[in-house]
Length: 548
Image (cartoon, rainbow, N blue to C red):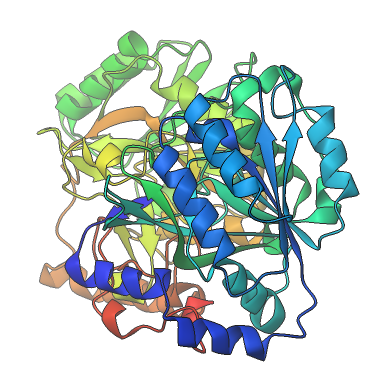
């Protein structure tokens, strides 16, 4: 989730959130024969700390121009008196509002599951957080389903409001991310689900107040990603302070420790290599390592002496390759020679300070069935160097997310510290299964220095494998400490050829990063609104292709 406070973006968000009555009535009349209906399930207990949000939710539901809906109030035995009074008041105003008293069984119970199954509606709207919908919320779903894309599940973005319910920020959700959903809600507290699909999930009474998150996890396992539509528009409101989800989980733990072959290319750079070995052997708390150093033409006696001494250790191998530097070819040769089940490509200018960094990466790779995972890298001065890569024409080919931001950006931006899916990560620290890497013939040797990692990640995604960033795995990257600048005359021709190869091979993919919100700029390293956002259409206007 990206939190945006830019003035022009807020103006755009206001325009999307509340349309004028004339426009809404026109849309409803156009889709009068849509033949869609909704059962809305609202968790009363979620509103205990924000009863004013509940009042607004009732008022806006009753004023929806699209009126084919029923509202089911989920009551528990711990609902606050104020919330109960509000619910009782509105329940007598409209016979479409009914209550489901779940007693002390908790929300996510057989009673709720049976109510899902007996629903006669086409879609069930699940509200698990203290939010209220825009007046056009239901019509937006109808329009999307009827004119653009029929899906099993829909979710949208949000506006953040203050105590007076004034809009003060945009909250832009990520594209559907099953890995992230295992750890926290990434939908903003509201989803619209095909009723029939709910018959395939089973309640877990142990979850208690975490029913909404547990239901999302189960839905993410049974609904194929192409059957999920994220509407990139703010159609619900959430109160400031409630936007950050406190229902956090973790990825499933794994007990196995497969051998990891750490592959490090270098030419001399003795001080750097000493630091890397110190980090791997004295800091890193992972019990099954093989270290392969690719010695690409080291000449200094002290370096050669250091390598000779290290080669005496059973877990260390020095692979001497005297050839012109080609990152892809060097690593491909080392991968062929590796014994590990997993390969960790590691720059020689990486410094380790957290003992658990590699364990976090292995857990994410195994539990999410990912093709590659990357780490959160910091500059030595503490600023972010890499929190994943964003691909796209605006970025040239790719740019590092969070580049040069302070560490607090991970929270203030809404990205968070959970493992999550991105389009690419840097091979400065990248973990991948060896068999998978070899089956794909490794890195592209034509990409000698740059973008070989991005190309590999995009090929993984073509195969349906996930690429993850694991922010809990933190390291320091003394970026390009031994590399020359691509803008130097001797490197310029090679660098331009690599850009051209990527743009030719991935022309369609580089139009827009599928793991990045379409309202955000791919040229900026943080979560920055697109410069043309003010000119982009609202949800009720025929959309341009890259907003679909």
